[in-house]
Figure 1: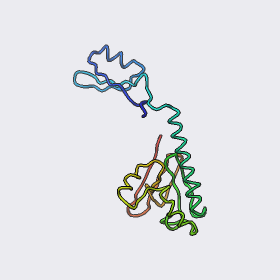
Figure 2: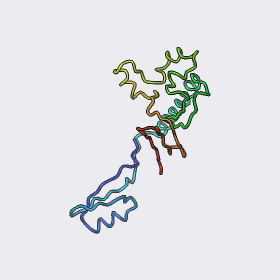
Figure 3: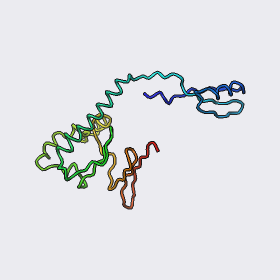
Figure 4: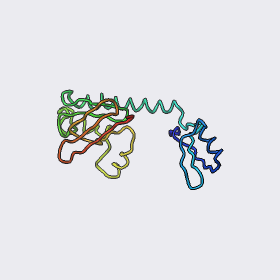
Length: 177
């Protein structure tokens, strides 16, 4: 859990104490109340709950799973002329396919049966609502969160995906801007 954004909130009504808190290096914000002030201070010391090596291991496993998905699923089952990777992150991939239903129509004909047997290694089970709810939050399984016709990407985490039709559905990301 990221505790770096946690704040301490203090209430003061004494002008001298308020001035002292405002001048302190951990001061973050001030809100005036009726006869007092609510002062927000950044925490001076942080006690991280996750050891750094655990966080790094999880991050490395996420990167490994994304590469396995590319090489062992997409590159294996699809012809390279049928897809193009647009963008990839540790938790998402944007892929342009040459057909409307890629996981039904674009799979190499000789591997369709193999894909049906191993489909649930990559995607949540969908044949039953009970197992679908369980698999929905299983780490390492992929799902199609958004489908569109066009994508404009300026850089990592700065993109827009849209459907240029009458509904004009849009997905936008502008992190860090």
